[in-house]
Image 1 (cartoon, rainbow, N blue to C red):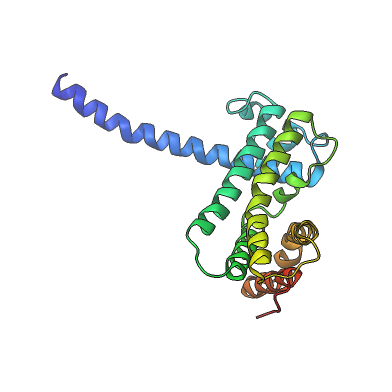
Image 2: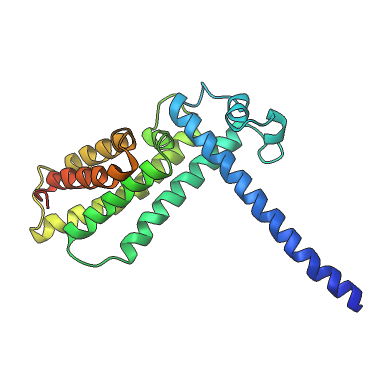
Length: 214
């Protein structure tokens, strides 16, 4: 390889890297917009034209990244579900303390992500019946992975005597239902009041397992 070729190759790498980063950001923007729309309106009520309009781009530009609506919604579900759950798993992997301390931290992180990053998209995971079978089943699988994080801590706390619940399933159903509404409650708060609102939600949900507010 000649010196000139080496220089050319080295100068090409940063440009290629920039292109990849730009492409990655664009895909993330598309997925976020799509997740919000599907969460707001449901699968059948959203078209690629709607996604393009939300992004202020042409419908044709979306085909550069996704072959159609089904591929787009599948990618949105996978990306949102995996990223969200991975953040919660990372939190638990690095946390110590009692079951109550870890559960409260988990609830607070979940609500914070919902309010800050995915206020509308959270509704994607309510599994509406009109969704196609493949997407509906994948949503259920992601919900189960997400639920396992909370279930493990609640069961641990019940076994140790730290928590008191009617049943684990009932406590978790109420907890998840409330967390689904949290973006609406906390998102309306002014930025300076939002952290306090999230803390209040976390404290209230801890009462489902018999832990009084701090």
